[in-house]
Image (cartoon, rainbow, N blue to C red; front, side, top):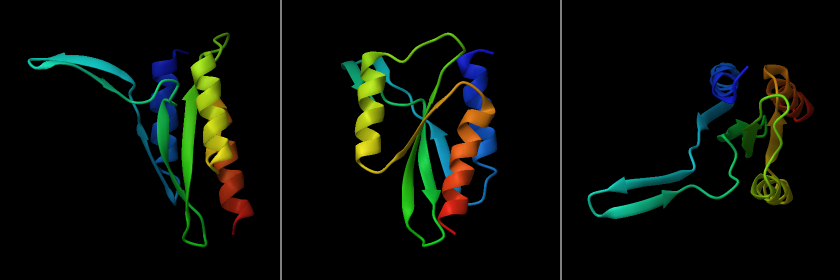
Length: 111
């Protein structure tokens, strides 16, 4: 399965879970008539969002999608470590289950 297909599957399922709002987060650059603009952070996860805990507090969600056999770049590892230090739920997903199970655990543990 390609990373693009995995991203679409994960997004579709996350957004069906009560209390989860997730979206694709692109990183890169674009040429336009006035020049070139970069967007996103180096190493940023493919999917970002928020998990609403039963207390009403929102927890940041970051999901890095990886096809089997592919590894995270040093920038992705650093982003994931920083996100976790700041209290985010950071997931490296190689399958749909890899992404959904940790989110479900957080929802159940905080209820």
